[in-house]
Amino acid sequence: MSNPIIETQGLSKWFGEVVALNNVDLTISQGLTGVLGPNGAGKSTFIKLILGLYRPSRGSVRLLGENPRNNANVLKRIGYCPEIDAFHENLTGFEFVQSLSRHWGMGRAEARDAAVQACEIVRMTDRMNDPIDEYSKGMRQRIKIAQALASRPELLVLDEPMTGLDPQGREEMFSLIHWLGETGHSVIVSSHVLHEVERVTDSIVLLYRGSVLAQGKISEIRDMIDEHPHTITVESSEPRRVVRCFAEDPDLLGLDVDGERLTLRTRDPNRCYQRLNELALEDASLIQSIQCADGNLQAVFDYLIH
Image (cartoon, rainbow, N blue to C red; front, side):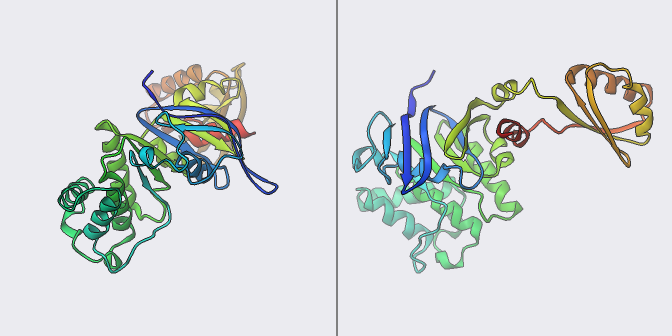
């Protein structure tokens, strides 16, 4: 296992009677990790705790082997892109990145070079000298990531980086995050949209109501729900004919037909897929599509909370 970036033991945070994070034990290693859960799950509280912005109510957190609270030496090794914008609108993107690099102790020339390189990484070179108040939402997100990258951090924390982006902006963000992971950066991506993070990493932490619901590879987490029936959706020109082919299947737990859509629930998905493929080979016009409704992280999450 690679060296841990983050370690927590019994980490808890409450605000009055509201428990935002409850007894969280986690070890997050180098690489690209998604911290996922619905709004209110505790993601933002967890991030603020690992960045030292909050003091734990109970338990401990170690960031790069140290306590992050009021620890400038360890925080210099972290890049943080917050969800909420906080710009001086009269600055250009380049000036914004350069000024924050200077804040962390770089000399003028070093900060200039770091800002240019970071803008190149996020593909903002052609607009880095324009005022930030002329930027689109996607450009603002990218320039925020540029400031986080300028110090060449050992860990990059992206809090809800897809928020407010249009489809093109999301694609650009997916591409950038995927590139960061491929080039050896350690990245934590927080999001409430599970399928979006699933596109860039299969290493996740699922939070729900302040607790860790599951952690690990998505495929490993899926293995935890084998006792649940699998749901398969079939588009067919003759769904009743398909139904008759499964009438005596002992592992079939349910069948629903809605127009040309057939939904099967089975204890043995492999055998079910095999039979559907055989039907498609026997008559190419019978089956138009086969989809596993449980083949995504959202379905796994739904199973775990019910």
